[in-house]
Image (cartoon, rainbow, N blue to C red; front, side, top):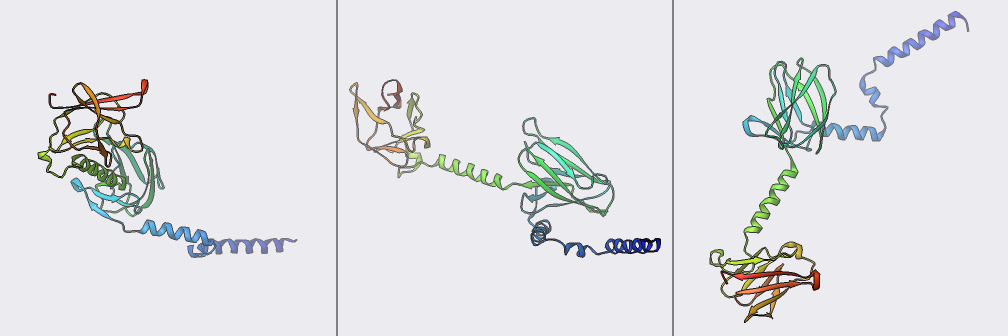
Length: 278
């Protein structure tokens, strides 16, 4: 191969390289596989989703965690405060553009329930990057944008599991305040019973409606054999008739003193019930 041929080859390679350099992004996208294109589309839809944005306390902008990729707008010479859940421990903070974006940690709240704040500052307007924050509870994927004048001073999150936890607490309190079994108002029930003794099934509540006695057991009794009820009369323990209903023992008369027994020998558990000062 002579010098003329080498020169021609070099020119052809240079022309090909220049052609590739000026190809639009769409030309490269055409080389993506079907799965790659589908994956990019799904990710783009999630990142571009509008989602739900609400107003929190003190002007905080609230995003629903996990619904979309939240877009936080910041401004040069200002700071954006991104507050995470109280008690959450930050593991890593990764920013796509670490040169023009600065992220510094801060804390608030009492020891043991402190909240981590990420203080975000861009160096100039018109920037777009992404930030990933890994914590002891979850991973945040956040888009960061900078604007010349507009910015979000405070940003926080609402967590779906918090809503479920609050609902569970409300249901537990409602259940605890409900008086099952008796068909009379709660104010007409007699709760003047004392319970002594130790047992895994120890009654949580004993009361009477004037005609029947109700002995309520913890949920842990479910699936186990209920203890046997003895009524103390004349210094003797007598077995009486009762029925079990939804974890509760119903006796068809008022009890002054009774004993609940389960097991035998060294495994025996016993609880004593007394009405008033009897």
